Length: 143
Image (cartoon, rainbow, N blue to C red; front, side):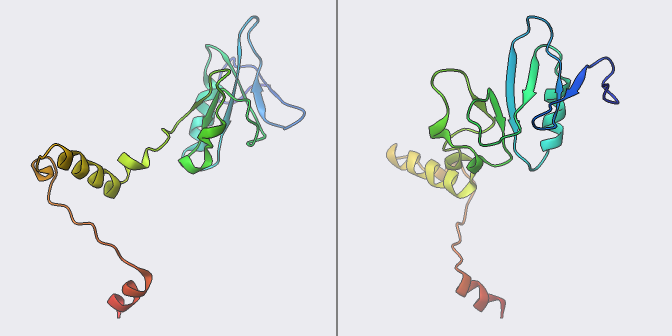
């Protein structure tokens, strides 16, 4: 079976899960990947399917733990505690990244860092306001 737009790439449908999978090259190592549904998941899946250097096989069961790479649009879909220490498993998120990727958490961390060193955080950061809004105060403000 040929896939349009991918000339010469041999694919077959897996009889157990119906997913299209590439025929492995003789002697090639097989790598297993999972793509969780979400933002850009089809693009990520296509990149893996078009990779010619090694054979990538998509796992249909997204709870299966024996994978080499798991792509997820959000980190909460990745259980970092269950990643294997016996073989290489990669994911597209860094555990605890919220401390630097959330603007409020990044601000708090930089301020704490500077306070410990007796430095003024606002020499590095622009003037920043962290506003805490509760649902009842939001409703009152909207009236």
